[in-house]
Length: 304
Image (tube, rainbow, N blue to C red):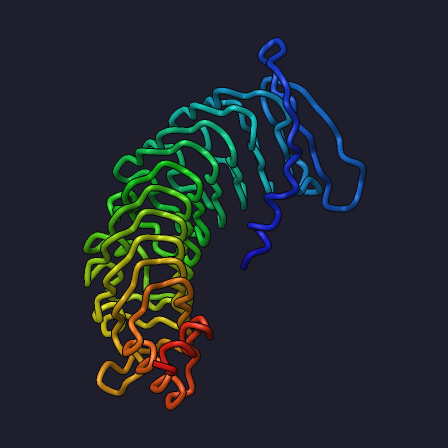
């Protein structure tokens, strides 16, 4: 599942400049032929032996007609000062993975990614602060969407329209302050990995993650104080990570009354009350689950 994400590191990070409005890019071949550097007004890929294309030099604008891709596994347009993409730029382009990492994109508009057959889209490390309604539309094969290290302050289901199969969703290192009701209703009941680390989340609505099947939910490095019990009664969650928050009291999720599906919870670096820690440790042990807390804090509570 994560092979596509790992491929992002293959991008060449080259500081360049515009020269006669040409696009300078590198071809990488699937059958171990040497890479090839080309320049032109259009990126042409009509050879199935080409596995990846990486743009090498400054490319502030990506306009319709600049891509002519019959089939390509990995397109990397990263760290090239990209600021604007024209509507329809990816129309009829057959690509599996697109990396637009480390650019200066501030908005995601509709009709940029419509109907794209890609599996992974990485938009991390931009300055995105606004996503228009329906910006991710009819992306039926999309499994991984990475929006980390941007300027988002909220997540809304309105961004998505008929994009039903996202399994890995990463919005870490943004400025999100609240998980609203229905924020993640665009996700289907599949095995989900949701990463919301290093934001400014203070509040989770009881129905913020309703009716989801979550393998891992990571909310580390936020400002969460209260965790609603509905998070566990209205969803299936396997691993919950709440390290480095402000949680003092926490539902005893391993007791029979709540009957949660959580098998592992991490709560390092939280000001948990002794009573809360004792209940979690005791009930986790009885249920066969794992609850990770600071051992010195637990020992101190037991001494008192």
